[in-house]
Length: 567
Ligand code: 9G3
Image 1 (cartoon, rainbow, N blue to C red):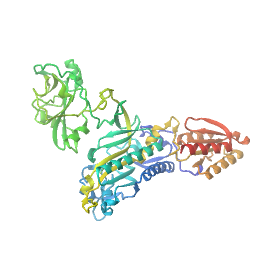
Image 2: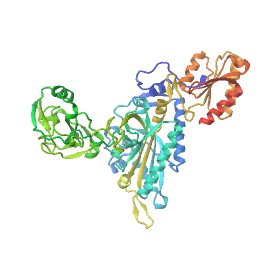
Image 3: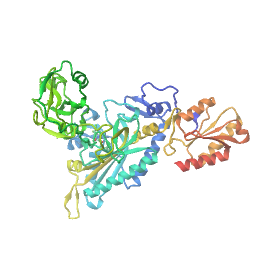
């Protein structure tokens, strides 16, 4: 491809709305352009890289016997009504009506649709197990799209669904997809962690996320030297016992004017946050509940929602707090409160602690669970933290890092095959329900994750396997006949050898050409400059900038072997 003809609108300046490196670089390198909030167009160079990523995913699916389909993105309401998901996702689901006023949505995911396809085509156990997949645009009306294609309202996902006759079969299909994911992400050159994850509204018996380590990742991962690795949404916690053996002291009410936060209370009472238990009030699907965690801890809202089976969970409003405690926010406590009290296990080991008195400006101290209040339930309701004892080895300390979720695999069970009455006949001619797994890869998100992990101050450093072009040939001075002729010869030779090659035949200064070549991150650059008269060219590797002077034929051979070794 000739840059003089190519639609490649590179930018010198960083666009203000782009906060993270990959978003900035995808705009500056002319890969994407924003159409609207969370909605992007792929320009030629971006689409070429996207297709390479898609094909790596496709190859890994096909090599693991998954079969590719392509479903509609316009999905009738009825399927989601059958599964009870037409309303569950609220405004996040893009909904529309057709000319006959029938309801549809733009597909956010396709469990129902794949299940319906299997329902209408698979009749016998002999056809199972079967894993089906598609690579297709998904639509989710995210409340806060951000970070370019990392959290967008339209994105390309590979979604796969496995159908088995029993749990053992599902374990095999799940492991098969797990292996396929490792193969795909390894091929993309991504460095990732495989993390135990919460299954959330999907139900089922567990899930794992493939996380790309990145400081800009929205997910927090807890890990330990023993191999424990979990999204903190799900990470089990060990309750720290600080004073469970102490004698119980007399409870007393204390006047605590203007001490609404733990920090103000610590200041006022002169003791540390670990001797408090905070009581937070939540509205769970309309029901107000109180949750208690130690003063220095945070409530884990995923664990809380899972325990309550709540779909909508949010902090109670000041009015709801007053209604439940007869006190303003900051003075809630378990003694005498009218709502259920869920107590984190760590609090059940505390003695003589401070809590709100359910009276504005008052707290109680020397409170003890059992004597002064009875919990509705004691369980794990807190976030794991750096320095906590590892719940797996109970020995080493927890560390955390941020991650970008590029894949998520689930053991689903029969939630969708039951809901859509999808059955097959077993060897005895008896109707059975297939057991499902579902498996997602954020294909467009992978592009951003690759750039987050593989870029520098000059631009993108594409791994060869996903680089939109492998080599860029740069005639330094397009007015110099010799340089242009030799550059064209190298360009033709490489094209003939099946190398994806660009030639920068623009009438631009050398510096501009070199900067653009670095910005768009092509793995190999061949400069054809003054040395052309002695058939000498510069061979430069984008990764590490190793530069070697050699003959044009050596440069052609070196490019071919470098690309073939790394593709
Ligand atoms: C919706 C909307 C948003 C959603 C979903 C449904 C997330 C939804 C979870 C999944 C689970 C798996 C198949 C591939 C792997 C992930 N956000 N999820 O189901 F209607 Cl608006 O998508 N689906």
